[in-house]
Image 1 (cartoon, rainbow, N blue to C red):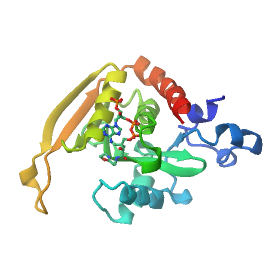
Image 2 (image 1 turned 90 degrees about the vertical axis):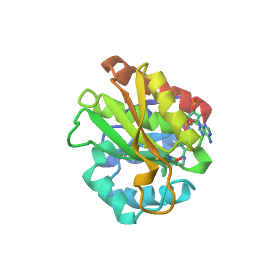
Image 3 (image 1 turned 60 degrees about the vertical axis):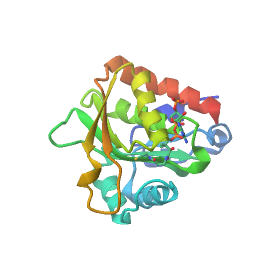
Image 4 (image 1 turned 90 degrees about the horizontal axis):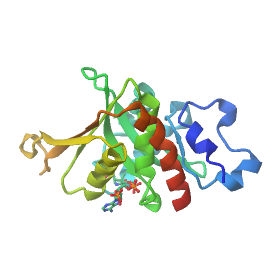
Length: 209
Ligand SMILES: CC(C)(COP(=O)(O)OP(=O)(O)OC[C@H]1O[C@@H](n2cnc3c(N)ncnc32)[C@H](O)[C@@H]1OP(=O)(O)O)[C@@H](O)C(=O)NCCC(=O)NCCS
């Protein structure tokens, strides 16, 4: 089984590389393809739908996702399975910390969870942005165990630190009751870890699918 498309697709693909050829399709159709979002493919709408279908994420305006896919595409990820978006990351680079990428939202469609796709997307994102980016940040609500495990697992795989501290305490939220949002700051990520781990993840995921 060739894994090339998974590993190479993190870069913005050329238009004639958007779909596998007929010969490749049978072999590769179940492998997640990791790539940045593209406004012209309607990825903003796909991210919005995946967020709504997540059953966990707060609802946001569809416009938000078009904005991320257009203005922050380099810090966002689409995981595509059989030509359809199955997961996404909406992230950005905090202006005062250019060595970090902040993952605002990450979601995997319920049909594809537990197959390593979230970790694959995070490793792919780091691989894309390293060496400028050496820290991965996200806030996690303490009740979201899947999210907590995802980020701790990525830190372990990268053999680096995962600092956890409340960033937005529950009492700062003005709306209906809200949990603390705990900042996970993972890093620093070495060049070796950023380069080496993504291909290993691709093989693990391919085997699980
Ligand atoms: C969080 C989420 C993105 C994880 O995606 P995924 O592709 O299923 O995750 P992975 O398969 O890469 O697994 C990552 C880790 O999470 C663990 N995990 C996955 N689902 C879990 C669950 N329901 N409960 C507890 N742990 C879970 C896995 O066991 C793995 O941990 P390990 O490496 O220690 O074994 C997915 O559950 C999701 O979309 N949730 C809804 C949206 C959300 O809560 N996003 C996070 C806040 S922005």
